[in-house]
Length: 249
Image (cartoon, rainbow, N blue to C red; front, side):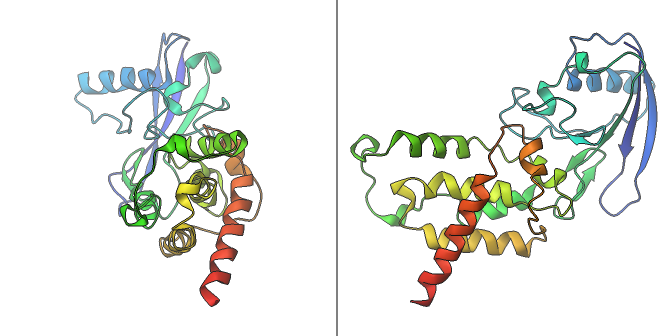
């Protein structure tokens, strides 16, 4: 495959970025997208040019670091996969591929295609956990949990925090991410003790960090590589309203 890559280059969040075009020839359809970028960088290094900076770690679709905006879609033109799971067989010979970083104010560009996702970490720090101060930890098998609830909690916990939901949303909303992290605890008995404080604190931090509001276009669900359901957003709203009622009692 012969390809033309239009890649966003930017030194940092304070400098002006630009697109730069590169030609790549004889790329195997079985090559992964990140392997294709590795090939490009090897050629750039051999020419003593600065390689394209992009983030990745596991290359197994479980860490969420590899998120790229490819031809107008987070993680590219395949459904239910991260960028590292995307293969070049989903493109055609002589394609022009546009590659950009996530576009959201809370995700400032570090360099080129790498953005700072620290905002997600700050939201988790506000309540995305079960505190040690909630009492003794019982054996998990001693707490009866309906299978449907357990399955829903596990599906919510599958969120890897890649930020595709934010990148896909016209408002840069983090509601799908936050709702998944709230839901994984709200559905289980272990998460009930801190439920009101958790959802209130996480939503407050989300707003402070500059994420936008949800306007129910569902682009987040459509582009999520782990196919997190938008029903989590409805649960987040219920939990949030409940926390407000409890705070007034």
